[in-house]
Each structure stands twice: as structure tokens, then as C-alpha cells.
Image (cartoon, rainbow over all chains, first blue to last red; front, side, top):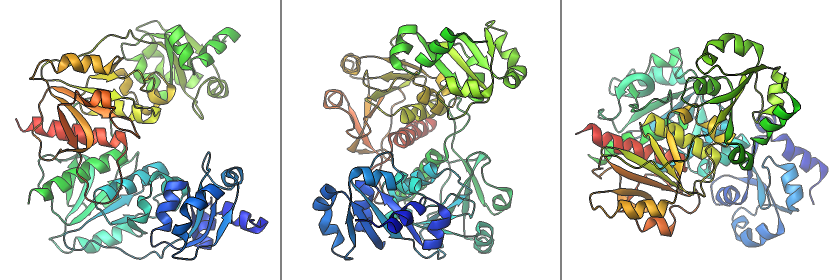
Length: 254
Length: 254
């Protein structure tokens, strides 16, 4: 049985302040928990219903993960999902280390993406398109937010991210003239006609305001998704997917 | 002031049953209401805060729309949004008439898209890519659901849709061998290498199960978005956007 203190600890992790203080975050629901138990994340404790544990006990062997069995009602009460009849894992956060673009690698930069749902979707898309590294501006939503983890559908276990000073990173990057920094704008070059490089950075900007002025000055190639109808804009997750599809398509043809 | 009966009527439109019975639906929030007042939809009544009405009164002239002024609190209470300090419009639904693909036109078919958020996103994407017609299976979410209207970000005023028997439509379509029916599958041809036609149908299937067997037999070309990483799937809205981007890219090159 969970102690009162354990319960209090788990509920505190709904908030960023306590996630940072304790270096831990929550992973909820059957699929996400199964994925995290098979990843290189370290699980502090697995809280599961009896049924989920019976079917997934083997996943806890490798790390000898401590397990607590609770009812679905208790599980739902301590977590953030509307309902959860499977499991919740308390998982250690990773160290924040810089991840830069290697040769033949595209790294995604998120400049002030505020919505956790969008951030989670972007993780899933990055994972689909084989993007391994994401640099988040300090104003971007917290990846460890339970909504981000949930929206990423397990992709948080495969994509790596770090929070850093986007301007500083780009300043160094563009000192080498071979480095390309793509940025999504409304007035850039048509992505259907660009010959994309296979290495460099792709910057996606804020949901309402796009890429900030400070960051924009380091973008070496502004790109735009052509519009054929009348919608004013595309959601940033959708735009990220379309841009990555165009970038990967080009590298196919080489 | 709104009468009790008017209030009851507005709140009844949260539910599909009453939307169908009354032939009316709700449009909520500043942006969506502005768009609907400028569209060819007929507004029964505009319920607005004083501030919104002052700034937008000119939009009500054309149809001599009846207006009721209420507080933001009252507005929020009668609607479905978490908060609404602008306006809500009660709008007449349109007649359900078949919309088929004309020459040089791609029509979207939604086979059992259940999530209102996904459906709204798809409307917005269709609008961006200049798709004018959508055929929804009877099991697809109701476009007039307030969540769909809201997620479409005004695109519901520019894209036309109807509910019909997908199998019957496709049966007739494929009798003419020049007609192409594209369908999104996991085992189709790579969309980066296909030469898409400029007219025909694109079928998107259910969030969990994809395109149903009954519909699949009329798909003449299965297509797949290539994966470069490890995510299991893409959200159906994202997939629709990527497919339409590939379809439009091809027609650019002609």
C-alpha cells in the first residue's frame, strides 16, 4: 500500500516546480508505462492495478522496479488522466545536456512552443521522421508535463531533448557557413521547390507569434508551406510534420 | 434579455439530437462568430457581450441578425467553451446534399473519424489545401458538434461536407476506370514516389482501425507515409495534412 507521503509525492509531480525539485515525472496509462519500462529511463516506482501488473510483471524485472498495487479508482485519483485502470510510473528525469547536429543530422529547435498538447504531438512526429534531438527554448512547455508525455504516445522514450539558449546555439552554428538553419515563416521559400540539406537545424516558432526576432536573425533559409485554399494558418504540430516530410523526401532522392 | 426558453434552446444545441431536431448549431468565440457572420450561413440569433457587439455590429447588418446582449458570465454558462467573453451565434444547419468530385478536384472521404478534435483539424487542413468537399460516413463525428466547429478555426465556413453512404458512392465512382480512389493504409505505396492524379477521392480511416473492410475494397491505390523513425503511427489529422501536401505538390509540377 502507498503511504500518505508517497501519495503526496506523486501528486506533487503534477507541478513543474516539484518535478524539478525531485528530478522525477509521471508516466500514465498502459501504453506509455509499457514503453517507459522498456526504455533507458529509470523508474522509481510502478503503481499498477493487479490486472496490469499480472500482464506486465516481466517488464519490471530488468531494473527490479518497486511495485505498488492499487485500485483503478486510487490510480485515477493520484494521476492526471480522466481515467486510468492500468498504471502510473514515477520516473527519474534525465540530465540536461546539449545535443547538437552531427553531420547528416537534422535537429529540431522549438522557439517558445507553449501548448503541452502541441509539444507532445511534435515529439511523436519527430520520432516518426527519425529526428533524435530537440532543443527547446526555456520558454517552451516542460516536456515532463504529464500532458506532453501522454500526447507523445510513447515517443518521449525515443526522442532526446534539452533546454538551452537558442540564440547562443545558433550564433555558434552559423559561424560555420556550411551550416543551414531552416525556419518556418509565412514569407519564406516554397518547401515544394527547395533542395533541403541533410544536416542542420529546423526552427519552429510560437503558436501565435511565430519565431522570435532574436532567433529569426540566425535563420539562414526561411521556408513556407504553400497554401492552396483559405485557412489562415496551420497548427504548429501539423506544420512540423509537413516540413519534416518535405525534408526527408529530398534526402530520399539522393 | 434572453428568455428562459431561448436559454433552454441554446443549451439543448450542445447535443446532436437537438441540433438535428432544430436544424441549428452553435458557433462560439470571437473569431469563429466573426467568420460565420461573414459567411453564407444563416444566423438565427447572435448572443454577444456589449464590447464584442460594439466592435462587430456592422457584421450583423447584411442579414439583419437579431442580437441579444449578455454578460461574459452568462455567455460562458450557456455555451460549451471554458470561457467566452465575446459571442455565441445560433446558426442554421445546411441541407445534406451529395457533393461529388468534379474533374480536377480531390474530394476527401472520412470513414468513421470519431474524435471531434480530429474532425475539426481535418476541416482546417482541407481548407488550407483547397479541398472544397468532404464526404463523411454516418459513423463519423457530427461536424456541427461545438468542438469540431471550434477546432476548425473558422474553416467550417469555407469547406462543404455531407453525410452519406461511402460504399455506395465509391461503388459508382470506380465503375468509371479513370476514377482514382486513394486510401491511407500502413502497407501502401510510398507517397514520395507516387504520381498523384489531380482528381478523385482520398479516404482517411478510423483513428484506431483505419479504413473499414467494406470501404477498402473500393480503394484503387493504397498509399502510405514513409516512416524514418520508430513512432507506431501518426494522428489522422497529421496524416491527412501530409497526404494532401504530397497530392498538391505533384499537381504543382504539371
